[in-house]
Image 1 (cartoon, rainbow, N blue to C red):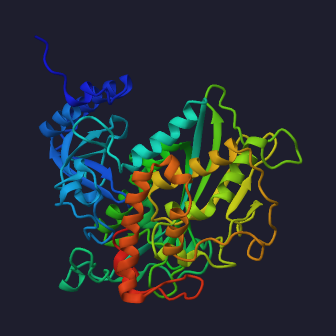
Image 2 (image 1 turned 120 degrees about the vertical axis):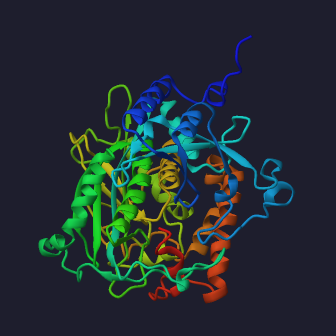
Length: 496
């Protein structure tokens, strides 16, 4: 009698390459004498959750997966329970969610790393499944994979380049006090930090050098983690840093961003410093940070960039123009996936190197979409400047595929480019998370492609965040006030 196949084999969850990599990883774990391996997964907010397991437990997880509580997907950004997990249907009218049940997380062998700042610790990213082998409804990584499959079915692949701003500060003392402790649904006070440099000396080499010891340590970390760093620069606000990464296939880029954000925060903390990917912290002189997503689509067999035009008077091919049109036409309902926090909407101000409406231009940093390249340039691409650095990378990138392909499949044509994007008569971007949520609710594009189940879940999750903010501050419109509240600082500064 043949033995019953283990979970991963039974449900055919790995490719042949992943099976081969799994064997290599087990040998490496033994050679490197690792003590623990962190099984990590992304929650809906894009925050890293993890369990550290022993080596035998890890080897077992490479066959059977590993059980976790579904709870991390039912909590808002402050750890408040949004859904009635202990009732029938788990507050979602889904029998499989009753009672806060277990999920099975399955490691992806392609993502295995040894953490440079904790050299006896391994790290691997996992996908979430129900115990019957079906994909978990609310897995953002699985959601991105399904959108990428739409491209792959037509012989295409999305290439993504990352350009992200974040803040590096010094911890004032690094001691956690009672004032920093909150409760489920309410964050304690944010940790106190001090600026690392005075800011507002764009690309200052002197200020860059002040930060260099930490940045050098980070660059070394990224290299060991195989993150394709291209550049680090002193940006605009005090201690504001921009990092860019070489382009890669979309899932690799999303995984890289997830690990980059996690690694940056942990390494800085161990060095007595503090990294935050909150868009606009409530600290003196802090300017908004953005996450610009560079994207192009290639033909998989030939490697040809399908955005590259064949005429010198064009910026994009007809395919690229339709993809651009899809991003513009769907900029409003898609905004919540690239700007998922209340704080992120403070960035949409005129003349701020951030957009405030759905515009595009060739090499124009005031527009929402900046087009780069041209005839004969294989790096021709679309740069969407809408995002905030706290966005979930899987949802952000997936939302771009959905919007862009809608333009391609509907053969849309983009409106004219705008030389003055802050005064152009174009659709205004949402002025608040509430407005963005309403736009998603009133549109069918994402419910069709992400599924009504996921969209209803996501809406309830973000609505809870809006309601908690509203209890303190009422309705909020970023176009009317520039004052970042203490609530936002406590909510996002350390979480992201």
